[in-house]
Image 1: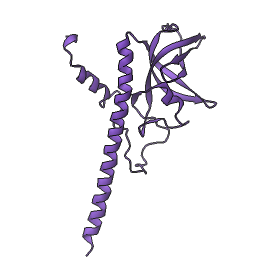
Image 2: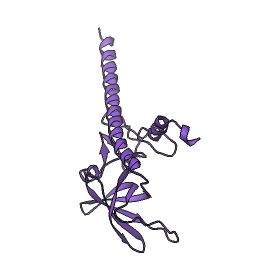
Image 3: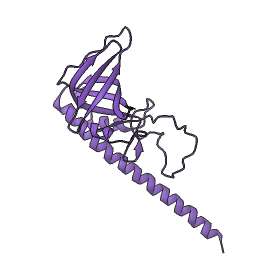
Image 4: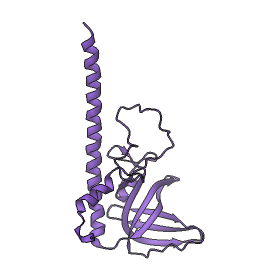
Amino acid sequence: SRSTRDPSKLFTSMWSDTTQGGGFMNNTMSTPSGGGSGTESKGKKKQNLVPVQISEILNAPEEGFTVEGSEVGMVVVVGKVISCEKATTKTTYRVQDDSGEIEVIQWLEEGTNQPEHAESHPIKVVDSIRSHQDKKHIMAFKISEVQSQAEYDAHLLEVVYSHLKLRQLQQSLFEVGLHCVFLHHSSRRGGRK
């Protein structure tokens, strides 16, 4: 039953490698070697999803959004709708969290009736970061209502948790890289007499 589910397993499954491309610890992560393998094309986006606050998006460089040194493909933002402007082909929201405010654009598919989210209501947005004329906005793939304060608070905890896990992952990758360099150097020195 639903009430007997282990919440820690549910939470950690969010971050594991999945075939749907979710989570941030998947096989698109590059090593800290600097050069890379050269097999990944520059235009290819990472297939990961990381919860963030709006200020992180606003303060990011134009290209290559990263969190704790790891490139991020898509983000999850939770905030309150400040304004909503509906047009024939898209709905534009201004969304605000405790750290900032950003424009969210949701393109409308012909023949579908996507729900409109009212002002002052909290929403969760799964999206990618875009920039146009030095102004950042986010392109929504999915927008849903935040059902409770607990869900809103959970997002904040997920932001902190993802930063810690990504920092830990980067540190581990760095240590593995140093270990490999040390082994390579030691093996070269051991061969000389």
